[in-house]
Length: 293
Length: 265
Image (cartoon, rainbow over all chains, first blue to last red):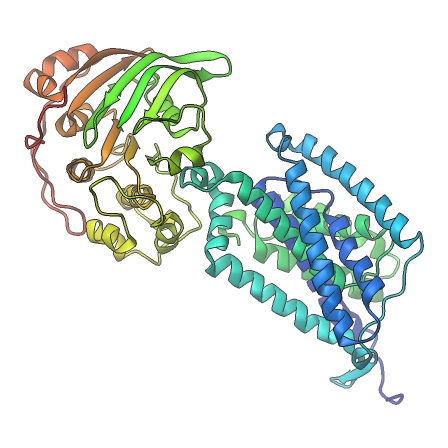
């Protein structure tokens, strides 16, 4: 396939879709945390990093190891999310500053534990051998794993949409975004909702961390980078809005990849310039929260 | 069924309710009326667990519930139809009903459990609006949905906070008659209402709150027989029943003032 040209814009655009969907799966958990439980979880990036490090530790180029990494990574991030919820039990009503301080502390401690366990260097991640190559897409060569990841992430996004739209748990989530107090008067424990939402957010971050490890590799800076990207996506998309989150994540993906290809010198500022413009023009995000989810 | 004993409650250190006591027998409607700021909604919020009491007792079927969290009080058999309805704007009517349905909870003693189909039989208008979101409903439909949502939790005690607020007169009468029919089915009702004539017509007993204190608590028959006394107490024009409105399709048929129930002394 050496004769196939690599287009300077098509490949970054595809990369942007993969990157954007990865950020969406990670940021969706943060949207759930804030929109439903009212919790600003600054440890969210650490949950992603748990998935990433798990992938680096377990992936050996086989399909079985990918399945194992998914089970372990998602399980560990889910448990970590539930643990954060339990730690937040006493400060949950004390305002976002206290929540931010506690979860920031958890992020610092979690990050240190991960570095202690896996070392200070970025560990290599092996994708399944069958996907460790490139395929031709519309005349352009593209990494097979990233193409598969786009499909997987789109499936995850679709499943998340169905879960929020069609299941009783999803109805509970949307109702709690509207009026958590009224949900409690229906006999539903707010603590159970909080733990469930943070555990689900952890599961999403863990899945994104495992599947996205070959794209955003695990390392000491991964948690901060993912948290920052997720916060940008949440601001752009509007709190409580899954549709807005998806649009914002795809936009962030394009800015981070196509933006670099088109305007390399402006690339470092594009992302935050976009966020500043959205905040200035439409502070509630790209999608109105009233129509959200 | 619902016993409130020397209840004190308020906000941020201030006391709104001062030793309020009410005793509502099973299947009775206790109306609580009063001016704005008298503490009516605080009373409902306190029973529902949304406001923590500063003192006193609240019992539901003999079970103390004061100070419990709202979800535990709901599970103890208290349903809430809040002021302003507080419908979930993003959920459809069908989703409201699905979310609220709790068939595993015990039904009212001697009564039939509330299912979605039974609620839709009672409130057929909702059946025609199942796919509409909460914020697409009219005020009357939202009120019906709020009542349906509360009923599906299998309450033994139903709290209604100004259910006729903002409704057209004929709809308010429908809501009032619905409350009456629920009580005849065995449900105990605490009805907070500013439209006094509706409260008096449907209630077995009427209490007046003034500055957080019960200043009047008598059988509703007395208020109906001498509407001027209650009106004078509240400084309002009248508690007499206005002319009956025309029936409207899709809502429960109106009935006259409740005269078919024994006095609850």
